[in-house]
Length: 149
Image (cartoon, rainbow, N blue to C red; front, side):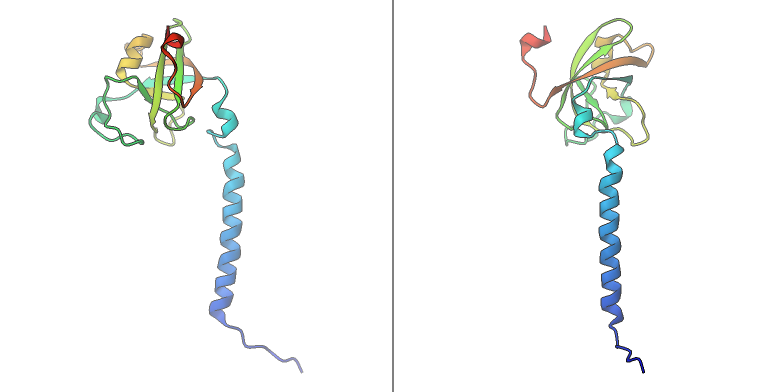
């Protein structure tokens, strides 16, 4: 005769939940390996499409808590960490601008950066609205003024 042990259903459910949660967390870490923004991606020169912000966002908080204005040299990016300084170069006319990442874009946005109008104006892309650009990561430390010349 087999002796059936009385099991605590609550404890069993708790163990199953723990195993599933651990598996989900492990999968999440693995799945994120292929997402943009990995540390090795942040150091590379990237190319892609840049756009500039709509006036709709003026006066609203950015991801780092600043109030958005079109009169600063800042940008939104889903690839680079907040506070990163980037050199953006317009591929067709060679004009460049240094901007600081202070915001994020909608997750579905495929563009590399979304610039303020001031930055877009310096790149000469106001009329077209978008431009093919090269993005260079300058790091978290503000570039020296000699670099900017």
